[in-house]
Image (cartoon, one colour):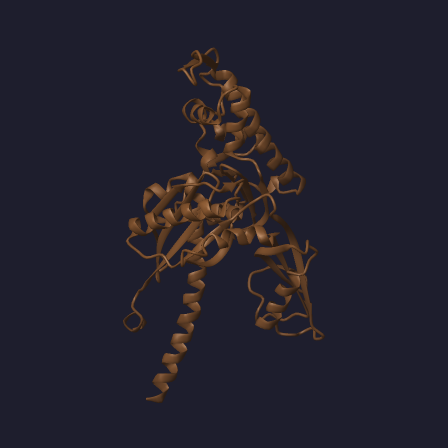
Length: 409
């Protein structure tokens, strides 16, 4: 009966990732049934972005416009709002705790109590110029009983919540939203890039078992630790694929553009097949042809990737999460395309490693199978989760209104 009164509808959700190497807009369609399909993609080479942050407003705005226009054509929709990614070395994270106490031991916990304890968890020492980007609930505890998902209706005098908070410099975050100012496109919400990639590339079983998601982008590398089904830790390194290119440029004494081409065509995170191999490069700027040792090229790449993975491994290990990562490591981002990177990461982390895929999302395979689009696809998934909550709340309201109308008759 409800299906006749409220026929299935679909909602268009757009994820916009303003990355260091390219701007990506992914269009998803989510139905009331919960089915999510990718129906369009728009991409544009990125200028005006360095290490994940806006450094040239006009260039970035133009690239965003081009990506959105292409996404509109691809999906045959008009984009009015987006979920926007955010990253950068200025982002910090920590786990906080909020506490609410009642005078009565048999106090029944109310939604207002939950609201208060969540507000308490958001009160922590942070720089005055910083803004809270993300708050992620981990677990509730009622009178010492841990692992509570929804404490409303339970009896107890002491309610606690553990929360993961991500915050960053307000002005640097606002630079991303300002890029959309002249495009008549509203920002639904700004979301940490690493969270988006983790949402796209992990399933519920991996989250419960414990998994580390590492997104190797062009300008930054984000990482997220899931354990017991919730996010336990996040981090950002201002190191990515562009740093590999710069290392090759210096180490091989060549222009960055040529180093980038060599990285893509002959680079790898393994020495397999490289020992004793060399390449002859054609004339450049009137100079004589030169030879490049492939083993040397790859050793430069391996050194930078190892250093990046070791920084993450040390951070995760020092916080005591390594033993909780029973599902291993998921890699994504453009760096996940480097041949041999899975094996290298496996050796550093001493954990099973794979390139993640967005298996729980349908539609265009070019989006769900591409590790470089993990953030944008994850933004769509995040938006779908947010819309689901709104639809459920709306459905409850409509059912109540319907019941009231029926009582009138």
